[in-house]
Length: 472
Image (cartoon, rainbow, N blue to C red; front, side, top):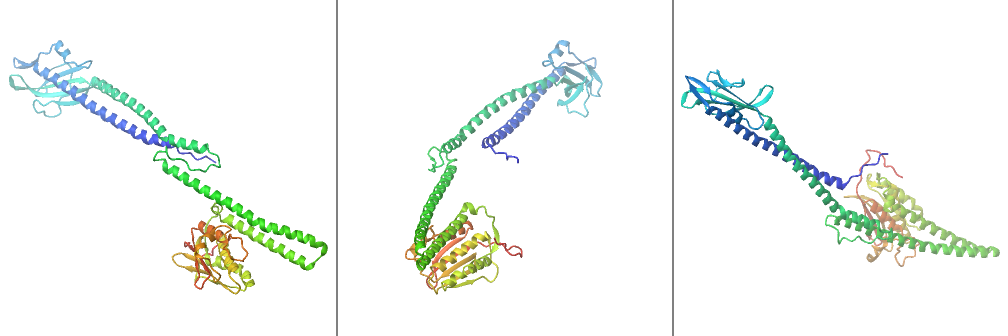
């Protein structure tokens, strides 16, 4: 199985910071380059126009013909750097007057004294051409076309130098910026490393809160969440310790009684006193029943713990059906005490989402408690009702529970003082655990005619498209 790729905050921060920085560098470099090329182009074009004006200044009319006085020294002065310079002079009807190369003539009429700049090719070299229509000095009736051209290589060399001059400092800036970002990210993440070291150095028994005095503001929510988790772990461990201590205490009493009665049975075996032997065996049976009941409740409570309940896949089921079956299982116990045990279901199916076996255990604990603490000849009623949610109610006409003790009866092994009914004190604790895992609410109140009514309010589930709910 391929191990999933872990995400790195450091890499993500560097990517989020360096990618925009690199994009900004590319954009700024491109803008700076094209702007510099435009400036260089304007500069070289201006010099090319000046060269054309210099050629125009050398024009004159001799014997009715246009001539140009452009000696080699003057032509050499018109070259800028190592570029090649060309010129050509045409009459108004495009007859060649002078020049050192054939340049492409103008393609359309030119207004006087307005230079036109174009690109062309001479001897396989790309050139910049300036074309001007003008008049010979002191001869306004003589119009000529002057074309001057120079190779673009100096322009390209100048543009390359500009590009290098822009890119190198920008790359240096990007490198220094990346180093600064790396250092900043590392320093920013250092509190997480300190928090990791502090937690790693602790033993499994140290659940004290993590100090947030030196913690940055952004890391404090994480520290508070860890402290909240540690607090809940402390409470859970303390609860488990109390549970073990109480369970040991509860088991110690019936086991000690069993040991005593076994000794009595052994001492009576020689005397064979039938009556006393029968009494001792009955006490042994009662003790075993108490232990069996307690162990059953302990197992039910362990199953209702959140960690165990989280492994159960929820399903939709009819609470009417589950409650009816759980109630019918305790009819025998109710008959033994001459208690009227009744079930009042809803008119139709009421679906809830969860584990039907756990909810069945919840119903049985509520009904068992009601039957156990209701006096002989009393009444216990189980109802399933439909409202904003689905409500399970178990009502009895027993002695009731004082309002001051209604919160404490949900504690493990707690039993109301003054009751002589046998029990483990775990029934309502199991009910609350199962209700919590089903996002249900448990309400304990007085009955309409005295006694106690316990309500469990569930959220509604969805019907299973006409099929019967599956019960575990």
